[in-house]
Amino acid sequence: DGGVEVDFVQYSDQRSECKALVSNFVKRISGERIGYENMTGKINRGLRAHAGRLKKDNRMPEMVFPRLKTSSPTVDTGSTEATTEHTPTIHANFYEETDAKLWRHELVLLRMKNVKKNLTKADTKLYGETIATELNAHVAQIVGHTVLLYRPADPPVLDLESLE
Image (cartoon, rainbow, N blue to C red; front, side, top):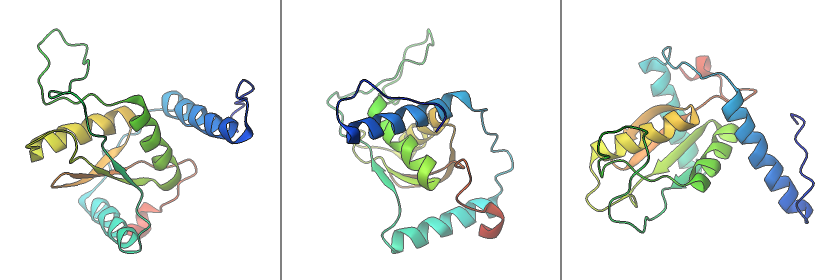
């Protein structure tokens, strides 16, 4: 369990949720960055095919980007340059839920249609890559306003060699 103790939460169901959230966060920030240089087109095709089978069986984990209240979402990039309106504000809850699904399933479909009006493919790519970078995941596919993310769990759930 990684030595995580949660004593300050009153109810046991909340305690286990809190423990899972903290454990996932600790795994994400304390592990080494995963290099996805070896993700070949063949592996990406296998991931897409596996995602298609999961979707057909209604077992594909999905996250719908929450509808934003502001007209021009932004994120602090630490840059001194003006932030473009194409960079989203991504709330911690969205990251944490997506992170938990990636640890459990390794593949997650992100539905980005709520990000803003007139969302372009370039916007979807930027948002998907922003989320992937933060969660140390790989963008396996972008179709329309949907992004397929992959990150190996510990221990791995999918055998990439068998997907090829």
